[in-house]
Length: 195
Image (cartoon, rainbow, N blue to C red):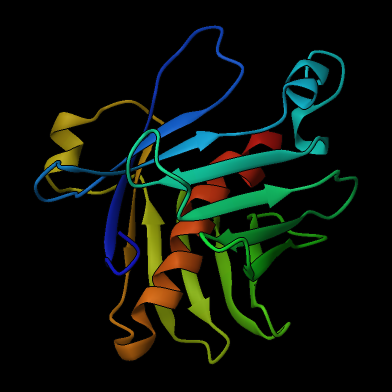
């Protein structure tokens, strides 16, 4: 699942749900290729009734099958001004992290590898829900959008569905795709919730 270049993310609808769940689909065949489910501790979920959700810890587990071990985890601890979100692989090793921008009107965050090198920036607009993955060199390496004109537009019409598209990065595709898939999910599951 982590060596792909496109992912269609579909959020499960629910009126009184306390935890988020997403399907990860192949945008061309509509085949289910993965699941992203919130694995936040119960005490933190119930604490959302008293405190703002964007301040509390959250964990998102990305799996290939519903009951399988996670291939990736997105983990954010307590947050006050600036979020730092860690990405953990299937072996429980941190492979990188995201750091929110302190002052920004259009949203976005920085993507770092495990050696603390900034490898990308997520730039975009919360209003139009279009985001770009931009490499440290300034080159666009992918996008996240809700304005996709493919098959998904006709089949999936709710506002919480979006396409993650990653440019070909050769030998580094699997490692880059893992971080950028996590970044695309983090836009909605971790950073967008404060909006």
